[in-house]
Amino acid sequence: MTASRRGSRAAGRVVASLALAGALASVRAGAPAGPLTDPAPAFSAPLALDGPGPYYTLSLPLALQSAANRADLDDLQVRNAGGDLMPTAWLPQRTATAQIRQVATTLYKVPAPQASGAASAPAPAQSWIVDAHDSDAGLLRLELTLAAGTEGVYTVDIEASDDLQRWRPVQQAAQLVQLRRLALPASYTASANDWLTATDIDLGGVSARYLRLTTPVGRPSPTLASATLTRTRRQVAETAIEWSEAIAPSSCAARHCDYALPRNVRIEQVQVVLADPDTVGKVTLYGAVDRPLPTTHRRHLLHYPLHVLRPQVAPAPGTVDAVSWQALATANVYWLQQAAGTRDLRSPPVWLDGDRWPALRLESGAPMAMLGRTPPTIRIGAHPRTLVFLARGAGPFHIERATPDDLSATLSLAELMPARGADDPLPADTATPRRVPATTRPAAPPPPGGQATNTSPRTGAPWLWAALLVGLALMGGMAWSLLRKPAIAPVDKP
Image 1 (cartoon, rainbow, N blue to C red):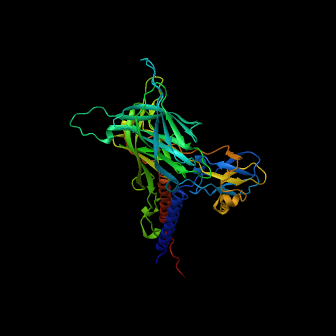
Image 2 (cartoon, one colour; image 1 turned 180 degrees about the vertical axis):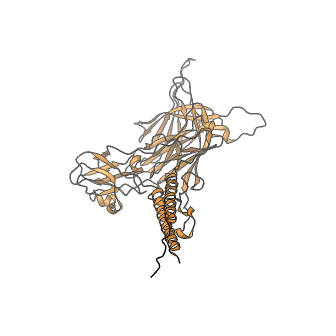
Image 3 (cartoon, rainbow, N blue to C red; image 1 turned 120 degrees about the vertical axis):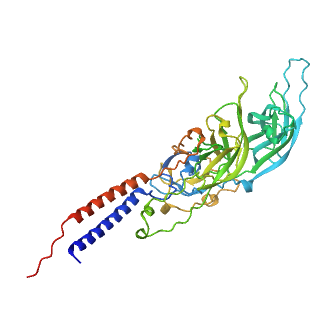
């Protein structure tokens, strides 16, 4: 074998090795680091303590729940100024299957006072009494049924009592709506979709044996047929529901919009906020269910062509290949303007089952443009999670997300507070976060024309190809310079 051939082959091996190293380096530089689903960014929220302690009750806003990497929130822990972990106990969550029941209740009509004979006299107030049968249960929702054929918009005030003597307000000016679609040709077959009905009243978990419904003086009274209560057994603590800021759609198609949701939040209610007044529509809510990604096998780089070096990007959340959709609820949504001085009619929140969903889809039976020129936004409602911690050491105290090495098992409430009775109230001293991260990331506006979009960025793809091209150009130049060198002639032995 001549020296020129040996030099050519050596140069070829050098070029191949350098090219492979450059390709691998460019793949490492261009491929996304870490898992496909990035963990939440690090955070630390200082706590303001109110009371001498040593036990404090802390209700976590939805934003703090979203900051956790674990669905059970066990990686959110409280530390003192020295960095020591505080003993904590989470309050049990209220579950929809075990705690919430829907029961038919008795409805009593209170005789209205006799109206005066004057023709201009306003209509007297009309009242009804609802017997809840159990003063220890938390009342979540009252569903009223209006008599068949009743049409109109009615206003009622809700009060609660345990003895029919002392009444306390629950909700003022709750609206009951039952409207029929405009007259259609005689050949049209009527259906339930021809009625716009909203007769559910949110009670917010109030405890009471009786409820009283009263129409204001001078306003028309509805004809009530029946009433149904949704109630729950009271947990260790009952907190008011918390609402998120408005969430804009991350993408929209002809008949649906998708919304990315905060993490780790058990969604109990969804409020659909229409952008344009005098808008009515029927929608179905779906929850995103992640599909497992197909298993990929690692290929040896020397036995397969260059396309195996491209970064393997998982399907973006919200696309057909990444998730499937589970139907959750169907509801009428509306925003109807009323006469001056009268509150507009807006659709009530939609109740869900309290599960965690990474995204929601709002699907309309008609084109999304029927719900307004601008797609609707949504707000989600949930009861915040609550924990109790034992403050020891020097303050200030703060809550942060612990690393996997620092995770410690949380205690039960009985273990944390051995002297506490089963029916004793929670510690009255409270801790409040002074600063919390944003609940949701700002979503990109939907494209014009209702076309579906994919909001997932192509991480590193342009830089990858640029690095590959530069590396190949350098390797080619080196190979060319080596091949152009003249071969060294062998020296003849004397």
